[in-house]
Image 1 (cartoon, helix red, strand yellow):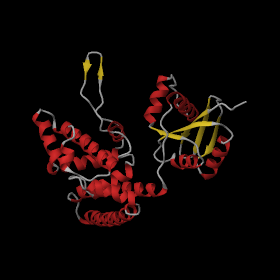
Image 2 (cartoon, helix red, strand yellow; image 1 turned 30 degrees about the vertical axis):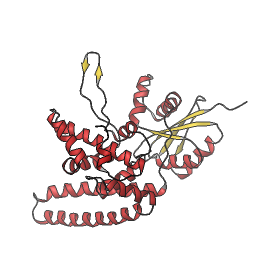
Image 3 (cartoon, rainbow, N blue to C red; image 1 turned 90 degrees about the horizontal axis):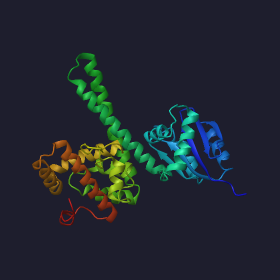
Image 4 (spheres, rainbow, N blue to C red; image 1 turned 30 degrees about the horizontal axis):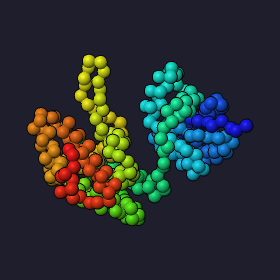
Length: 318
């Protein structure tokens, strides 16, 4: 008899991987380390696997997900909120590792989420370097804010830390430059993005590293991925304002900085921002709309492989 296709849910923790197969109902646990992942793959290879569902768990899921993908398994890494909402809707109010694994398997079978394609080793290295640079810049800003209120040895300690952070950031800038220039496609994309008034090297590199879907999907999808698509909050007679939520916070932060510059120096975004303000829109709302418009422009440019061209872009819809 032909084997029945199985949906696999894996609940990830630092120490272990709790696994559930659906509809067989089989459950088992392995260690979240190389030897345990080998056992996981060997066990799953006995079955006809439709898809493996994992939650994004702060990177704890990546080793298992990468190994599964390399062995040919279709994987999907979903937002934990999706899984929790699905559990509540299914009446699964209790929460244990075994229950969570079963919920993920059920979610996969019912919702059939899109397959996640993990980044290559080079892409992961670039993403890690860009993320670490952002973290160090945040630390640098925090230390500068403390600096003025300190005296004596404490002030000297902060000064030394600031010097160390600045050195590390410069080293990361060199590393990011080397990584981003190592691939022709990345070089081309960064050059195209930097041609837009408001987009500098740091923002362009962040977009290339953290948003590889740019230029590969439609405007609606890319806006949802970043979290700048306005979402309805209407129910019954209530009509709420449109809001944005979810998405990739690091990309959204980079896009926000780009929009701040663009509304002053980019002629299209500048006029768009001014028009929204003249219509009575709050500055925050207008700036968010500019982020959305800027992202759509960047998506079209990467898709078409064309740098910034004011006449062409000016003819696009608002």
